[in-house]
Image 1 (cartoon, rainbow, N blue to C red):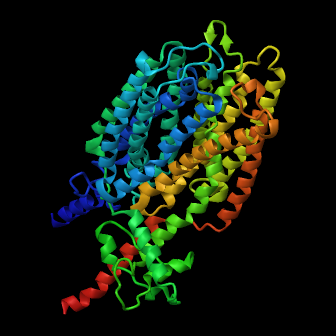
Image 2: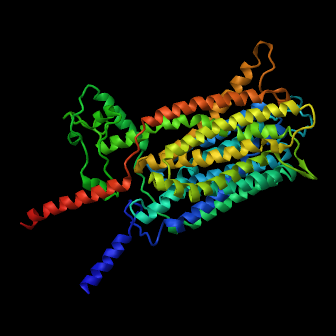
Image 3: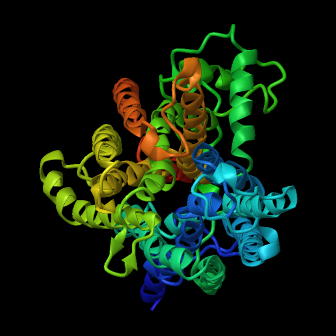
Length: 588
């Protein structure tokens, strides 16, 4: 009976997660009760509805700004990219609040309330005639009445309230999903490898609905219903997420990652004259038990970014937290800093993505869009990005990975950086295709307009590129970030998109201005038939080629971090060994 009881206790103990996750009260959780795909199902369903809400606004926004607020090509495009850029930058703040103070769950819940209030105000702004300028049929927006300061203030105030809300939801929802799998349990870790692919699948499934059904409603039924449905969808998605609360695993906030990183940099700077010992064991480190208590792991010192190792050198003077840091903290900082060159290499591809909902959509307004009595909304072509993405992700995950895995022996088939590199090559091709297509469109513009489907190749290729670059980017920054900085790591991928949109605004304004000098017409005008987007896209292709060269250089020097589960295994074995060595003395 004693043996049976011991066996049962051992089974219960083995059922507890080993990665430090807890319930909302801070109690350890069992794998059989919380987490796994059961918990993730609520998160994935949430993402479908939330993406429907977000893309229901962003996909057709340039058309609303042009037709209802009477803004020109450059101004409307830049207003979209500036807003989208803010949307993708605010997650840095959300990640900080989650990691340092509230935790991922409560940060997400609070941000969702802000998000919903912004969506509601936006729906009100497009529904009331008094909150927009009078209707105008003149194709040149310069000849139409402009929106008042109050009208613009309410509309953009709603947009940027929404942006603040997404800052707390974007970096935390995917991380909450990934937290439902224990890295230290082989079966759950295997499931986690596919999580990000299916996570992107859920994103683009919701996006597909927005890019087709919602866009059609906005163009042909009305903006009130077209914005009201996404708002209702967001409300539904929040309710669904909250319904899954009893099944979630949570991580306790580990303190501000920015503070921990700043301490390492300051400590190393203050000891810049101190020599780093040749033996890493002479560097300052906490006891193994300190890490084991919280399900954390110790990271051994590495030779990369060796200057930062000075932060862990004991000098015997006032070794406060801003003067002396443990090796693990130093290595966590290194991991975040090592990813920055990779992050920079993703800015230009993110700039290309910004063209989808701006210039690509504007091109569609100049083409023949009628099939019988059905008018195709220009923004609905973005649905082909979604379809291409969905198909490519499934083909990649189900066929390409198992095939390539036989040769590479890599569980992912190819490395994350290799996958990102393939995506960058796709962006070179996309902009070449877009340039040639636009040249063909301009040559036929004075005759019968071409079909809108002439733009299809650039939209389809963009979806294929996303299947490689965007999925790998999210997984790379999550995977390579330290365990205590996962939300910050995830925000790297959103920061890439944010900066890419701001670069798009800068390039569009600058090139529009520069090409108009000295009496020239300019490349980007309100009348696209008099513009030269073909030159603009060719410029982007060259920019992508240069960026590929930069990417190939930085990945040569990148060192992947060690597997966390391996580190935990080593830590557990060392603790057992230490305990075994102490037993004789305690028995004496």
